[in-house]
Image 1 (cartoon, rainbow, N blue to C red):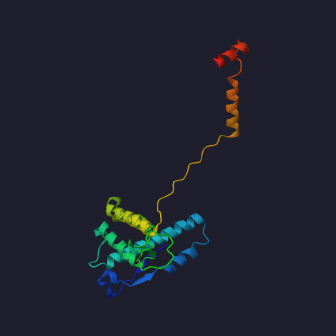
Image 2 (spheres, rainbow, N blue to C red):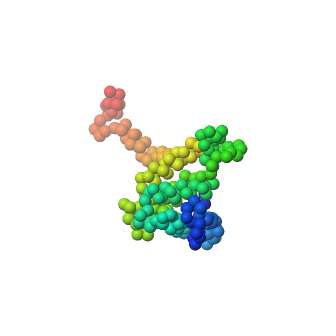
Image 3 (cartoon, one colour):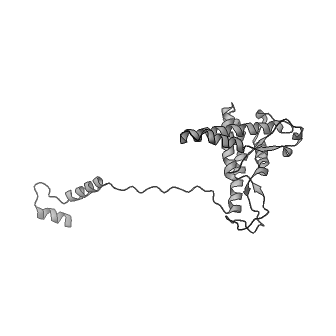
Length: 216
């Protein structure tokens, strides 16, 4: 899973967002893991998710403040979210082969190649989901949520399709096969009894009459 950068503040080098200083949040992620190791699985997963969502929200807030010109959250649009996602690509760790690469579409390339590293689609998709939730938790309205903009959804779909073809990996969810319902022993026996009763004699009739009715 790709690690997202944590932007540092307090420097004059932020005249351009591409010249921002970066520090990985590996230490914070490890501390969260240690803190939740003794918790039940459900609460541990929830705590990890909330901590990661808070870090992502703070990182995006720093990105807006370091933007030139600075952006307020109320002025943030889907276009700015796309700028943020493209900016994160420089810290990606997922090899995405170009169409001219010999390993294009190869899931397990046998040798290294000069193709660029990008953020994995799954990481970006999860990131947008967390930021979308954090936006509304911090007072944003769903109808003005920039992380739910149509342009962002189309961009994620394009990244998924491009990486799927380039890496030879399918991102389609496998459909679960519904289990075939099996008849229990009681239902099977009741069906057998019901079938047997069809051949029992009706009151006031002889066995010869019953047999002739079934042969007709």
